[in-house]
Length: 225
Image 1 (spheres, one colour):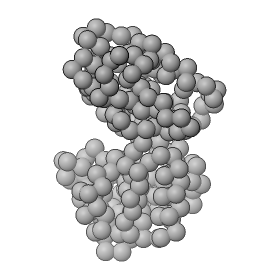
Image 2 (cartoon, helix red, strand yellow):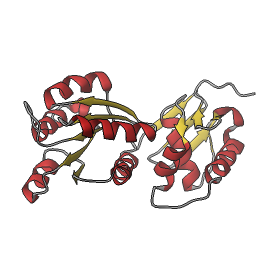
Image 3 (spheres, helix red, strand yellow):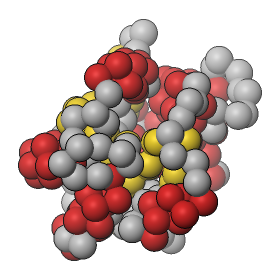
Image 4 (cartoon, one colour):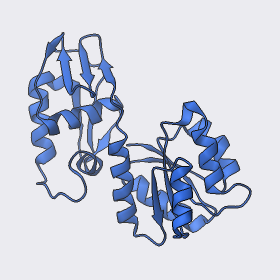
């Protein structure tokens, strides 16, 4: 799950995107122009911004430059979504700090796939910790429990790292599949369950909770039984 800010002056576009992104489990906020969005960035703390180019008061290119000029915001992904398909417009968007440039019209499912790909790409290569006895190091693909390394195959590692990236947050099954396996890969319905079982065998059942009918969450305050 990610925090996403939609900046577009067309209300129907905002509502359509918000609906589809929320269906994927994302937390979504909206702004109708760049000036309103600047104020909202500090409140919403988005992981990714879907940004129109042609807007009143402040266009998308200027907004992107303003965001990326602030060191505190440089981690934020920006995906331009615009009707402007000219080469010079795409170049301007990417050179201003944009991470992707998508032209309208686009099917919501295709856009969601692009967004999820961006979010996967932006996983921070850093250490994620829970308790003093549990550590995940994404940069070195290393997991330690009580200072003892535990071996995880790649998909198990990515699944555990995803859940641990936001402790106590419930990740929906659909989001997990898209984030770890990708929307273009077809896997069995029980694939996540099998991987979760294997992870629990290695780190303890108490570390991951099942939310029936929804998905899974990583418990950062769990006590080992």
